[in-house]
Amino acid sequence: MPQNTPDVSVIVGAYEAMPYLVKCLDSVEAQTIGADRIELIAVDDGSTDGTGEYLEEFAARTALPMRVVRQANSGGPSGPRNTGLKLARGRYVFFLDADDHLGEEALERLVAMADKAGTDVVLGKTVGVNRNAAKSMWGRTVERADIYTSNVKYTLSAQKLFRRELLVRHGMRFDESLRTGEDALFTLEAYLRGNGVSVVADYVCYYLVGREDGKQVTKTGSYTLRFDSAKALMELIARHVPQGEKRDLLMLRPFIVTLLPQFGPVLLRQSDEVLRRKMELAAPLMAAYWTPGVARRLKTEDRLRLTCVALNKPDVLREVVTFLKAGTPPERVRRWSRQYLAYPHFRDPEAGIPDAAYEVLGPDGRSAARATAGRLVRRARRVAGRVLRRLGLRRPGERRTEPGRPGVVGARTGETKGGQGAPEVREPA
Image (tube, rainbow, N blue to C red; front, side, top):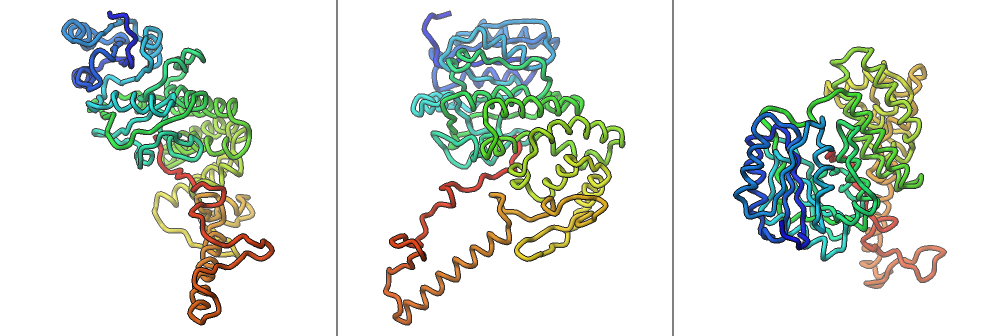
């Protein structure tokens, strides 16, 4: 193997990966960045379908610097990824699943972005092939994304470019005790410890392939594994981010992506005993991390479901989920400046669910009615200004000075309060 430092170490962990492995490796060999800037480390995790043999055959004929490791089955994707990480020499590492494949220019574009922006993690646009893939974070290419307010927190899979120096400095490895969500834990830690996150959205870098045999790890496993994953991610966020708005914004991810699905339509097919056990598993997480700042940023129906979980109201939760599944629109109730959706047990004193769980809020957590009223007031002021100018009572270009603030005009700046738009929170990874 040559002694020069490659730009990218591509790490492929493979288990029972045939025939998908063929296209996966071909996509690495076809990279426009060039064979002299890549090293390929492939780890066969105890396959019995010819995966290991194909890796060795490919290594014997490819021009890529390649190393093949064959090890006993570790039981999950973390083991082979960690093995590959120990052997990597590149400035960057990229974790490529053996079922998936790369766009031809992927590594060239990702490395160029990391070098230009100086960031430690780069996300490349991902599309699904026979499966869904997250979409909301690919609106535009961004040199430095805000991990708190942008949707990059909703794509925490490991298929990204990481600066190896960051991983070495912090001794980062995949948690082999987790059977699901280990990639989210690793990636979010890199987001939090690293020097920025970039997004390459103008080119499809990664093709996420749905296997016809349904053997993706994310499709299997007990519900208890999901709670283990949520707990690990919430604890990571709490260790790195002080209490407050930023922590709440990151906590949205495990609440929406991991916990909410456990308390959706699936529970209608499960026994009371399973629901009771889920409530028990969720209880410490709700007590520690369910805050008003998290709650008010959720859709009303999601906030209501998790409020039922927080208050240990399984019977109310079942009724709410049954109502939601039926698809009947709830009555909209207005009380002064607030609006509510009258889902089951709204203002039922015996149920004890607070009105706040039913309130309609804007994406920034403000009352939707108040936000609407504010927009109407601003519109009325603009109309009044035009009328005054037509009557000659205000000169063209003259703007109203805010009362009590001489010299500060009520002009629009193009920014929302605080200079940031509200983050979208509806796209799971």
